[in-house]
Each structure stands twice: as structure tokens, then as C-alpha cells.
Length: 442
Image (cartoon, rainbow, N blue to C red; front, side):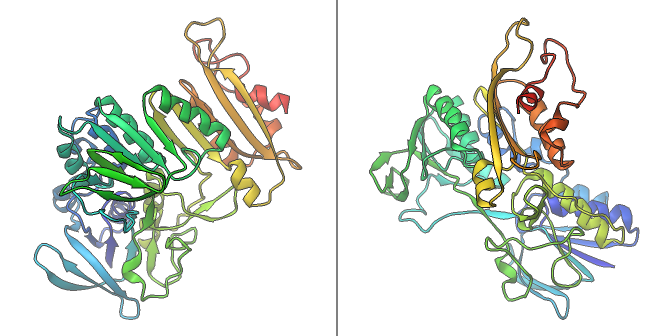
């Protein structure tokens, strides 16, 4: 059986390893357009400020390991340009040699990930303007942060934008963060985002909301960021305004995609074309709470979907059960956690909902060094089913957001939260966990 996988990072290599484990006679070819395989993209911001010493530290397995230990034909600098679905052929080009190639497949996995959104702004090609998606991006950015770089501008207040604002600030840089909308971190509701904005300002981040970048100016290197309301001097720019699925290379096929370009898949990771599967950031992710296909590109989901795709390709029928939209971010002294639906999402889906918010201590009040948590629960007004939660604080956020994620996965009601047997000791919790206190109040 000839397996071809497009993409050699999280989903692609999870699938490749599952195929090798399941089908002893498998011939697996992986086509990676870059030079690096199987690395943790979520760790890249921490390489920039030296918390993680090197890009080598986030590589799980090298190209040579896949080739020599597992017998995978792991290719690099191979850019796929098209797919002939009738003849089951992948076309592409080897970018180092400029040689074109064609490969036949029995089963194909598209795990091509996402690309950073880079608008066609004036001056976008100036030196000193960076994105952060690959190990090459990381090395280039780290090399560019010299002592001469003092003023750094981060454009975009999402995951990477927040993490990179912190990273630059800990390097002693003066950081501006420009956000087009009226709040940071739009995966949170505005009332919770205010806590994030307060933290940014307290750490001397120059926060600029409600301004849209229109371009850049400078001689050979960026010197000024221009917006619809003014201009700002800068020595370096980190562009982080979102990503889009890397799926343009098979636009001539009839594979079904959503409005963002993500490939629709079923629970077995099958696409609308026979013998073609998709997984990871380029695919859709069934959302258990929304009960529809969504697109929330995260490393955890990519690894799960990749494993399930590989198993199904090799004849072991596994199913992907879905996501509930869980994520967590470290931002200076705060941890920002969310799962399920926000108020905005519940409104958009016309779900009758109620909200409960509370400030609580992260552990017993009499035990030293406790801090406040801000918790927001969203639940169905009629059925009392949990719909989502957002938690921001210094300690204990991860514990409680995972409790909520598990409750959402199991479609629990607010009342059922009170029955959970959660861990208690004064250094970690009160006798009643804040989530259960809120549930009792509701």
C-alpha cells in the first residue's frame, strides 16, 4: 500500500507513525515543503526570549530518525502543486533543484497546516517585518533582534501576539501592540478581555486598540508602522493577525472546504474524495457544544486527528470524537483559559443562555499566598447544560478549565458540577471548588 502524506509536522507525522505501527508492509512517503519535521510550533515564542534555549529543543524527531529508524521516505523542500484525484497522482516541485515530480498513491493524507495571513500592505517586503510559524521563522527573528532593536511592534492580539509581546518585553524591548478591534484576545468575551488589557498596560505594553494597520515605510528596513489614525516609529515588526488553511494547491479538485478553506472531514478523517484524508490545522474540527464543523487550529487537535487519520488509512477504524474549544495562554503573571462557547458564540448560535461570573480565591483563604480567579460560566437557560467557561488568574486556572472541558465533553449540567469529587487540600483549593460554588449559586 502506497501512502502519501502532505505535511511533516504534527498531524502528518502522527499519521505516519500510526500507519507504520498498523501496516507492516506500508510504503509511506511524506512531502514537506520546509526542511524540518515534527516540531512543537507552540514553543516558538519561548525560544525568542531564551526560556527555551534553541529550536533544536522543540524537535520531537529528526528527518533522519524517520528515514533510518522507521523506514519512512521523509522528503524535504517538496512543494505540492496539485492532485489528480482520478489517477490518484500528487504533483509537485523539489524547490532546491527546481525539479518537478509525480507520485502515485493508494491513500493520501492532506496535513498541510496553515499559513500566516500577510496582507498586501505597502512596504510589507521591508526587512525587519516577521511572522512566526516555522523554525526558520524563529531563527530569522531571533537573529534579527539585536541590541539596535529597541522599539518592537506586534500587530494582532491573539495567541501569538500576546505571547510575543511578553517575549519581547522580557528581552527589555519597548513593545507596542496594535489591535484592529476594540479588545485583545477575541476568543474571550470583552468583560474578561479587560483583565488581559489591564495586565498588558501594567507590564508597560503600549496598547493601541481600534486602529487598523495600512502599511509600513522605511528605506531598506522598516522604520514606521502606518495606521488609519497615525504612524509609529519601530525597529522591528511581528505580524500576527491570523492564519489560513494551506489548501490552495488543490483548488482544481472538488474536495469540499468551508469558507476559510479548511477541508471538511468526517469522524474517520475522510474527505469528500475517495482515498483522500485530511487532518490537523488544514481540516475542520467537529465542535461538540456547537454540534457543527468548526476550525480551531491547535497542536493537541492536530496530533489526535493525525493519529486517527493514520489508523483509518491503514485499516484500523478509529473515530474522532470532537473538540470543545479548549485553550490556555500564559500572559505575564496571568493564565488565560477558556473552553466551550463564549457569550458572543452563544448569541450567534441563538442558544438561550445565562451567565454567571464570580471572583474567587485559587486556594483556601487562610493558606498563604492566595490570589483571585475571575471565572465566567455560560449555561443553557432552559436545560441548564453547561455551554462554556472562561477563567483568568495567576494559579489554578489550568486545573479548573480542564474540569470544565471534561464536563462539556460529557454534556453535563450545572447541577452535576456540584457532584464531582474534586481534589482538596488548603494549598490547592477550598472545601468547595469555585466552580462548584458557582454551580450551587446558579
